[in-house]
Structures are given as structure tokens and as C-alpha cells.
Length: 483
Figure (cartoon, rainbow, N blue to C red):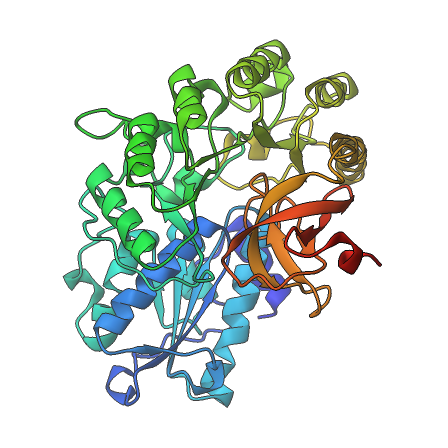
């Protein structure tokens, strides 16, 4: 069966057996002599944290995780299924990795993650090349499953993220100076376009004790930036006995005070409280940065999305945030081409963008996700129109982003040094406090200076672009930094 055929089958999930008739062979557990593992992690930072946890679990059982897939006896692919393109990438990667069983040393191919969770019953027939399929709730037992010939029924399902995750151990894959901190798993919201609850379940918060212990561990390791992640940070703690939420957690992290940058990603619009904003305002370590995915501002579209609010309530939220935090950096995302979206409803986003003048905006065409209410909604918008609408919004935001930086040249700002820039080995790459990791908000190009990776240095802005900024270290005389 071709990759395209498998992509189509997993998109529709309507077949239980592989047309090839190929059957899954028994695991070659007894042939694992060197216990080497290669891992490919796909998807979001939350998935990356799961991969890091699996690496630690494997290491505890004597496995050696290596970068050379040709030499790995076990290959693990941590999959993503958030949108159609992610599913296709996951299937392609699993098929690509299966070739190492024919041409390399690999004896076992393991699929983990969201794709497995959503299609656990169908995938054995569709992907017989994969020897073991583990949903996120089963990933914690990956090492035991690889060293034991017992059947899968022997193993319990214990999420990597759970209230009792003390201590929470992992082998970080991020650069040594920064880390992600996943504070909860799953989501309680029922957005009509989102498949996360189908693959990750309802929210499970980690205890504050577990999180604070990990923050101390990360500080001991010299981490300079911690980014708190969850599907919805603002619901953190609602499922715990004491009911204390994100503001209390942030206050305690701030008291530790040993990590200079603490960043928040993914806050739900209606749960950004004044208390949360004031904790951020009064903190010496919590960055004045919030990522609040609005998804839309038209009340009628938001209702179809099964999300609250409208343009007026979103504008009031922006005003309230900026009143308490005048220096806040705001990031958001929008979905264009949601079923039934009219030109007038789309124009509400354009008008809102011109009014709000946000710092960072991502725009995504609507993707039909099987199993979600929006999959079969009437009024599906043609791909051509979705592409045009995305282009229009990004054009508006590009002009806004550039205009908001027009007064930056000459200013001195702290920059976290990431290392050599991919644009040139002769310059360094870094980020401002208002730029999230992994390039989603742009890059700072340090044109001159000798700062080390992971250091936070004062830099003077030389030139600005819509998304990137050129600077030089203030320790370097200006004449030496000229072109």
C-alpha cells in the first residue's frame, strides 16, 4: 500500500486491515544486544517533553539513546495528529523509519503519541511495519515493555503527566540554557475544531510540589529560561484538591527566583484574570509576555467554534491587560476559513488587528479534523479563499510589527544568546524577552560581540525588520560594530 493510500486511510479511518495482508511479527526483544534506541519527536513542545520523559525511562532500564538511527536497535517515533498535515507527517515518518529494519540494525519500531491514541484500533492493520503502539497514557511503561516479553495487558496505563509526578525526571533535548515545563495534560474545553481531547483526554494538573521541585532542578542545571506549557495554562490547578491555580504557582516560582526568564504560553481568553496579570506585573522573573489564542473575534464564528466571546469582549480584554501591564508583549493565533465564515465575519479580524496592534500573530487556515463537530459543518470554505484570507491578515500584521519597532534603533535591550545563527556562522542568534523559543516570534541577530550560549547580555538595537532585529553587544564600541 502506498503512502498516499495510508494517509487517506488514516484521514478517514475506515479500514481495519492492511490490503497487503501483512501481519505484525513478534517483537525481537531477545535480540536486543546493545539496547540502543533512536528517537524521532514530532509535533509541539508538549510532545517534546513526553519524548524527554521516555528517554529518561529508557536510560533507567539500561537503554542508550543515540542520534545515529543506522545503529539503533529500537526506533521510536513520537507522533502528532493535531491536523491533517501532522498526521501525514507522522505516517510518512513511521514508514521511513521502518526502512531501518531492512537496511539498518533496527529490530523494533515503536509508535507513540497522539496519532496512536486517536487510532489505536485501526493502526495495527494500516501500519503492520510498526511493532509496538503506545498511546500517551502508556508511554511511561515503554522501557518495561521493551525488556519484557509479557503481553501488553500486564502493563498499567499511567500518564507521563499525573498529579503524583514527583519527581518528574527527563533527559532534556532543548539547549542546556532553556527548558519547557509542562504543568498539565489534556484539555477540558470542547472547541468544535480541536482534536486534542480525543487524543489527550481531559485536563490533569501536576501538583505544585512536583513543579516547584522540577524548577529547582532546572535552576541547578543552569537553565536561564523556563517556558510553561499546557493546552490551557489558565485552567491549571482547577482539578487539584486545593483549587489553587496558575497565579499561586507563579508566585512560588518567582520566590525561587533562580531562573531569570519564566515565560507563559497558551492562555485561554476568558480566564486571564486580574490576579494573574498582577502577579506577572509584580514578578521579577515572570516575563511580561502572554500567548492568548483568540482563534477569531466574530461572535457568530466563535459560537460555531464553541468558544465564548466576541470582538467587543476581546477588545475589553486587551484594554484590561494593557492597563495592568502596559509593557506586555501579546501573541495570538487566528483560524481563517472556518465553516460558514463570511467576508463580513473575516473583516472583523482585519478591523480588530488594526485596532489591537498586537506584537505577534499567527494565522492558520481551518483544517477539517475527523471526529470533531466542525468536520461535517455546512459551509466549508474553499482552500483558495482560506489562503487568500491568511495572506491578507499576515500582510496587515507584518506592517504592524514593523511599525511597532520603528523607535527601537538605539535602544538597549536584554538578549538571551541561543548560539551561532543559521544565517551566518559569523554572527550569533538570540531572543528578546518578547520572543518565544523555536523561532515562532522571530530572531535577534547579534552582529558583533563574544557572548556565550545561554548568557543574557545587554545589546543595542541597530536595525529592525518586520520579525527580526539586528543588534550589537553594548560592550562593543559602536564604531567597531558599523558595517
